[in-house]
Length: 163
Length: 175
Figure (cartoon, rainbow over the protein chains, first blue to last red):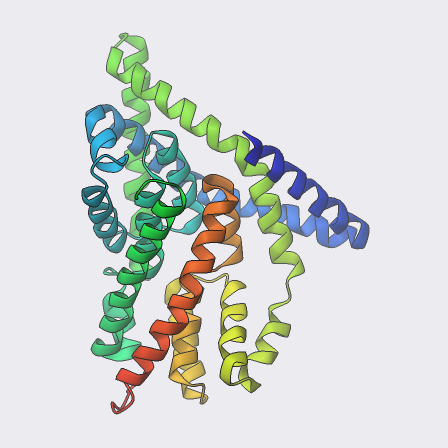
């Protein structure tokens, strides 16, 4: 897994440069890192526990067929809807996506899920409407939904998951 | 929003508590499904923890070294293409959740920023935050993040311009 070697080198070099430039700031960076980690840990444990249960209950063919690429249209539609409805912070979304990727969920389904998660907010709709009015909020979320679909297709194309 | 924040952890901790009891009981009475579920949990968590140290170090470094004040300073004055670019740069350095970004965006509009640019900022702040992208690249790969940026940023600007045009004749009542 060379992505990991890459990351550790990047973080190592970054930290080294930071240490040379400013020892105090580097210490603050590490404290910040630990703080965010501790803050997200309960939610992360909860999500992973939920997924471990769900994957046991869910029959294997569901992931293989609907989320893994065989019937990608259904998978993407499902991911778009779930992503639009749910609300998850990014620090949780991507570890979860990585886990799902390992379980065989395709890149295009994950792209649809993560992008709608970030761009479409049905739960936050009432709050957004207060600031921007119904029409603008509707248009903005609709645009987000379409953009998510386009990104998903592009990702599928690049990763060879769709012809 | 305050209510939500207080409510969430309770549900979460009840779930985690129940889950733990279920796993421990499964271990004691050798209940096979419980064991399998815990094996999965353990594998998943261990996988993630291998990637967390570098990801969090990079996020921490980003937060300490990037000075948002500098970015903010350039935002108000720029217009045209430069306006879109600075809106995206401002969005990249966003650290706040969406509900905090909303009033900031409406504040920008009230101060006279073009609606297209405010919308670009809002859209980009949803998908181009650097700390979040560090996590994305960590768990889904640098290629994934790169494609997503290349495809989504032009689409964000494009849709903002279109929505800006659609809203042109409508009086916006920002709170």
